[in-house]
Length: 70
Length: 512
Image (cartoon, rainbow over all chains, first blue to last red; front, side, top):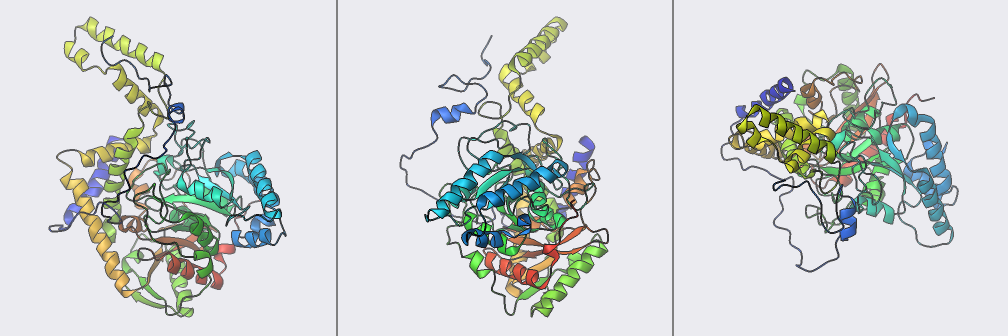
């Protein structure tokens, strides 16, 4: 894996050949302005449905291994 | 045979009452039963549900009620679109049992159009790959030669179309994942403009590049499926808010005075001579149909793969951070994890190594670690590592930001080219389908397969792959047409013109 990652990093480093001074980075394929919607309450996923796909829950919250102390 | 008919043809027969959806669906299921054991196109086939839905649609149609645009047509879906209550695995052990609580917008639109879902198709894990070999859940084979890959990442969808197991399929394309398997399986695959089809409910790989599109046997069929799935969606803020043209009506109108651009670098060394001959012959066909052909330059195209393999893994590393074993997806066995951690703590305590003891994972971190390392495959891990590296402090400017600037240069090349020509014509892949396992140990070689396709994703423009020949060993060769943003109609019409003049798209793989 290390050798493969090395080869890939070496390959992508060829971008340094290009002079990109004064080129604006392009983060997205279509450059949208902010897209807003009304700040209105809408129906959303039911809690039981959302929790239902979790590996471990108590019907109210997701459950994870204890983090603080033993 | 029903399964040999195009979706457009089947729909006309369904509408005329000459055939029922149950008959069409049953024909597809029989075909799947007969061939999919060897092909592996599907991860799951829902026979009874498909037949029940088909029957309900037949009854709706017979009763004279209004039916949807695809009423009764079987559709196969790449297993990365959320389907309510049904497993959506993304080809990963991480999501092997995941049943989303909602439908993707594309699924909802297909349901509203009265399509019949026959099953979910195999794919490279999280759509990362070009051969479908990275699927954690099964092997898909090329119907033209079972020892070869079907392409990827939408390999299952392309295979099921080529093998006539369904008339229509949905794929997704982040760097070529619709066009490349379509080319290698001898079918028609269309990546629309970024934002033309809602990504809501698509399992995210690289959000600024991902786009959903149709895989079918003809441009007409692709037009029909795109028409139903495209359009603005309030649930995807990046979806384009523009009306959807009637692609399925306009596709049959030939284009007069079509201006095609050829990129000389496409024909540099590395392009297989048989592929080159097929592409040149396709250009000749277009000339004979009245198109003019001129050379255009895409001077930064050769940097596309390098920019792509920084941008896509960077976005992937961020997107895949959500798989934490908490909200959904695989979680490690907690009892074993806690026992392991206790053993390590005891051993370090006994050895008196206070530093290592202080650094030992807490239980939550160890749960994240084990859940992720157990259920992501090697290619997914590789891309997460590449992405986090490219985004890390100290490397961000040199890699990620640099790649975004090169992306702009690539986009500007396309903009300049499309001032001179309507469409760019060229290859999809440098070679026909390679052997299973051939590039398995060489990820860089696998990445270079994307050379001709990543440009359209980086620039956000549409591209279509259509069959244009076969190699001396009988493997399909694909032709790529790329257009400016929102040139879907032009691309589909140009593809249809070619399919009226040639019969490559009618060829069938040698299945028993």
